[in-house]
Length: 452
Image (cartoon, rainbow, N blue to C red; front, top):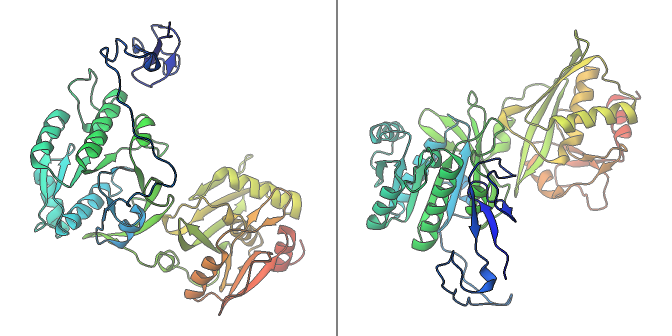
């Protein structure tokens, strides 16, 4: 006899026997029996057998999915070349960061390009959406609006209207009447996302869903929602800063970690075609603690500025404050500088910031961070015409990084004349920029700041 398993309707965890409480999510009375699919007809499937599926081999050639360009280069770049038909996208970001503004502008562009677009808001009335559209100069776009949260009514309307693109703002406000839970709960969010994703695949309609984020910056709700959709985008930036980054953290139809850069203005979001120049536009004369990093975001080279401040601490426990970089990695760099280079930071407060609201996750930024820290500590400015990149190991050795040529070309475009990078056989000078190879962290510090 085939074994029956039980699955939690809230978190999806499997159990070998029924219990009143799920061991994974601690929810009560959520376990339901799942009949064995491999044992033929079962009670849970209504006594019906499944149909045989069609199998193909790896040599089978299929057409690439059709795409529609929005006409916004930064958005099309993040999407991998445009919006894919029958795809489901999830867009997350902090409250007030500009998610609704971005999607309203994108919806208007798609509508002007011939798509039938429906924008459904669960958080605002249609009059409020129209006011935003008027402020953005989009009032003449052939875009249809609705303010509704009942998922059944929404799907019925979509079946009748047959749109090409649907925008749901937001998924946490949707309410499925067959789920006995409040809107925004885990079961409601999961069920609503499943229904909308299934609708997208079944009808060949693209669906974009807005998702709220938690205090940790993650999209609220069960992680399974991110697995359901084809693309997950994060809209990042500081609310009091004009720069915004649209980052793809998952994309089944294009590269992940690709970014699009926008500037928030009084007339909405404006795409930035040269983000490196924007992030470095506020740089003045060389100052201690400032280092320019040549990084790679997705397929795009981006230059940004690391700013460090080192000051005597009035407290027994020195502060370590980081904005735009990993705090744990900062602690590692400080330890390597002390252990391998003899530069102590004991009793000193350390502050590190990435200018322009940029967030850097690349290990290649290690060397630029170390340079900024030592520059701030010694009160000695780095060369103004130099970019720095390289990964630091715990031994103090420097490891080569990828896409060196793209980094150097981007630096050369912005007028930098030299680059400090780990020594490598593959590294070569680019016209207009000289590469100064560095063996290890100790020799790097000695070359720039003298013997410690």
